[in-house]
Image (cartoon, rainbow, N blue to C red; front, side, top):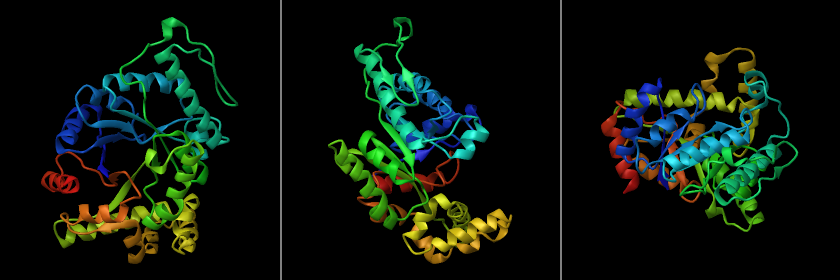
Length: 338
């Protein structure tokens, strides 16, 4: 199991120091998110400043971008990193696509499948000179004049990860992708009984094994150097879990433990604007299923015990940030790798 981290920054001016620190700390990969920032710009900076750490998106939104623009960006980053780039894509939900990005919504699973296949064909055209003919229900790419062909690179195989929750996306990752970003709201039981079997099912469809697909996710970790820090982190995690648990899309994660009614109660509370009381719906028993709690020196072994055979790459939900608890993070990374 590899230990990764997310790239946390407020301004692009902070990125150079952050990526150098993450690589020096010993993390295996650095993931860039698409929330308040473009996910690719910081990785362009990181590609010129790092040597060994893998760089990826977790995730970049697929539908607001043409697969052709994604192909060019990924090709550039793969070339700049000497093969260390991972393209992670996600769909987001209907409301964000239609109302935040003003792009049409429909058939997200089949549409993502076409994007994956189109990217592979575009890259094959650039690398091997094959005729571009990526056509389907949603996308058609048939033109690639020499003046717009960037040509071959040393590491042409770009790993593709997708994110998802429903069975279609789990199977699709197993069938066509090198990795799958599992939603951070999960339990070991849910991974074992739902996610892994679906990914394995998809892998068998293309003659592969579950081991050919890297499952990665964020883990909720509750730790601290004293009781006050532990208590503060516990309530912070409880609130975030309540927020995720209020979304009906994630109800199956609760159903796996017989807690589906919690989702319905939380959804109703948020609909009424009762934000101040949502955290109390997440019991200590639920915290034990969806998070790991312990002293800093106990956490690495606890995470390995929980996720062994279930996840291949792991990050902390509350990620490393330069200048915060440096000594603690260094010990955690060293212990995790030992």
